Amino acid sequence: MRKTAFLAFIWAVIAGTTLKNDETLFRKTDYIVPTVISPENNLFTNKRYELGKRLFFDPMLSRDSSISCSSCHLPSNAFSDTLQFSLGVQNRIGVRNTPSIMNVAFHPYYNKDGGVNTLEKQVLVPIQEHIEMDFNIVNISDRMLRDSSYYSMSEEAYGRYPDPFVISRALACFERTLISSNSRFDQYVNSGVPLNPLELKGMELFFGKKANCVSCHSGFNFSNYSFENNGLKLIYTDSGRMRVTNLESDRGLFKVPSLRNVELSGPYMHDGSVRSLIEVIEHYSEGIKPFKNKSEQIESLELSINEKEALLSFLLTLTDESLKQNKNEK
Image 1 (cartoon, rainbow, N blue to C red):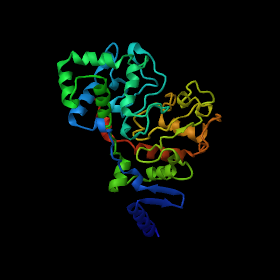
Image 2: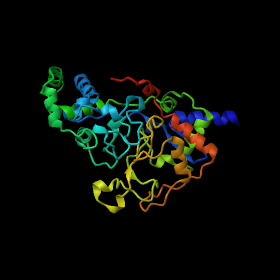
Image 3: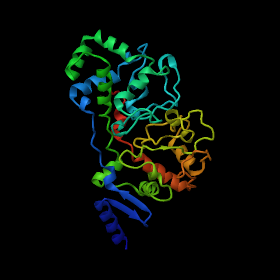
């Protein structure tokens, strides 16, 4: 009997679907790395990548040259921050938790409220924000013009001197290369590297009817990019998606985050108010609050201690171990 069940399981994996008791549906094909699509005016080249990478780690993008993009997007933390709110120039405190920008190439829109529709535009947001870099892209261009090496790199990459077009596109080009696709989960899907029993139980919960995490955290990047409210609070000082749409029904709604490398990207939630992954799981298990715009699919899961441990174990399989080695990425 055990041999028959094992063979059925193997066949399901080969066919691309794992089923258990008709309650768990997992399609292997949903987790194949998508193709990175770049706009026609910013196709990838090594020269553009090198320029964008240099800019990403250069503090001269901020008004007082004190912080760079990498000050808040730490390579060792899946290009997220370890603080509840990142610190901008003069230690100004941010208002939203810094998200990971791994796999940002696959996002259909940007920021937690979806207010920006291209990566080339998004890179301008932190540069101009008063509580972040508090600068102007035209002034950055002037700084680059005074640096002969930047001038040469810009000419080689885009055939023009350093200007706002070059800066925004080079940064976006670099960020599109930040792809994470080699977690233990990926190895399980692509090469059959086994997960342990606790991890498999957590996977069954994640994709099954009991927890149904996949209703929002689906696809290669473990996000359907919808805007949802997860019952974190009863009152929201951050209006979320409403900031873009001005609709009261969008108050407190935020873009569903990717769960890839979630082990490395804490603290969690839009405001960084949840410190650990187990606390995140406990929120969904018994901490849901009845906010008026709470998403219908969000209900307290009432998980057992063992189920919480299993779900945590599965989430840890989404970590790309190579990112832990990026302590000194430059």
